Image 1 (spheres, one colour):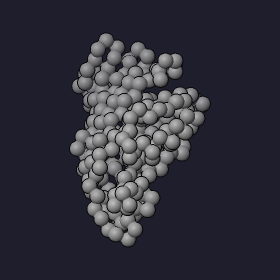
Image 2 (image 1 turned 120 degrees about the horizontal axis):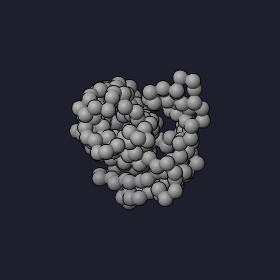
Image 3 (image 1 turned 60 degrees about the vertical axis):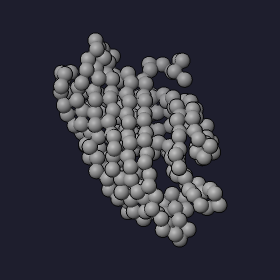
Image 4 (image 1 turned 30 degrees about the horizontal axis):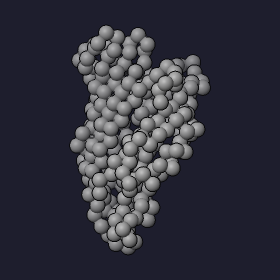
Length: 241
């Protein structure tokens, strides 16, 4: 089953507290959300959730180096929907907690190294995938290109998958899984005059197999997920929707 889903979200970030060491407490509020594209099977499971997103708030804590150290808020859970008289099942999900955290990390990104072409550095990262397991590894950055005051920092994710300890999505119990990234990379565009990110993009494509139990029947489900993210940071919300 091939599913297509595209949506746009506009958020406002407000600094609520600036500590003496430069660390921040920030509120992220979803101001606007719209479903742009969905296939007929996916649309009923996500349309209502996306419509209810405006007004949702998250709390972020950032270190003096602008690393997101804490992210709090309520996210939509994945949904599993049976169809065809129980002959098939589709699982759909929106951004999970660590997905939101990683988008915030890209938004507040700051250069750890001097602005020198070819500079390389890395940071550890983890991503909890809920019932499907988790990822851990490192993000490798390289300062790639400069055009006037705009600097491109390319990055790649070096990740290792950890199988789930058990869990469920709806009536489907996850008993095991294996996944392998096919593509995990992105780019951040940093304005050195303004001292902040202007936009960022990422693509994460993964293949795997889930071992699941549905209504007492064990089955293997092949999954390929292809996610693309595009972030644009504006000084004001005017005309960005």
